[in-house]
Image (tube, rainbow, N blue to C red; front, side, top):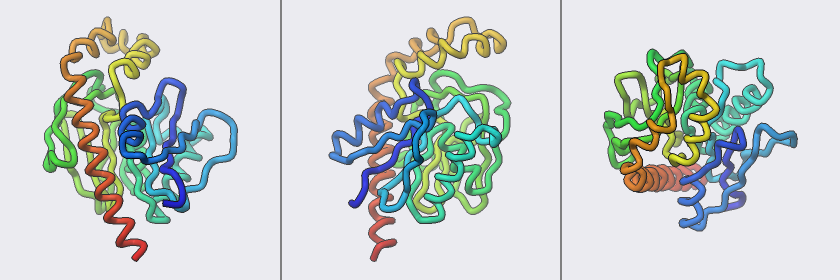
Length: 231
């Protein structure tokens, strides 16, 4: 492996969390690039995969330089057959690059949710942490893996995997988002976003195990793809 896996982090409060913990357990080096800070953007050549995490932005915000640069980097990864793991905003970016649409969700998903999954060995049913106001549609040629009543939750396209939920996040991480989103929550009639998260505290251990299962399955698929690609 000539280069570490690349993780795009889009803000101080959006760390790789359980993804970093999983990678450490596997001895898999990560390079975490903070997209909101000034600096040359990294290359994708030679990466085992690129992970794109959550963001306060939408892929539709193309006039925002960091969004345009993120879309361009993920497009390069897809073009160069570097597997992409897109999580929430990252899943939206991946869907956008592959030709899907980004649109307002009919109802924001904020808190703990179970999903309907076609491949529980790759995408367990949860409950998962979610925190999003938009959703993506299935890109042309992609395969739907999971859904909720409010929209698509996971898809694959070749070696790439996109999710609308946050397998990488913990209650502690999402609590920061709930606190900063209080005005949005109030407008939605939600008095206490942190309480919604804490109400699912008993799910935290199972969600961690499910996240590791998802990352394991993605990594196994990635290794198989890279072996075929490079043979």
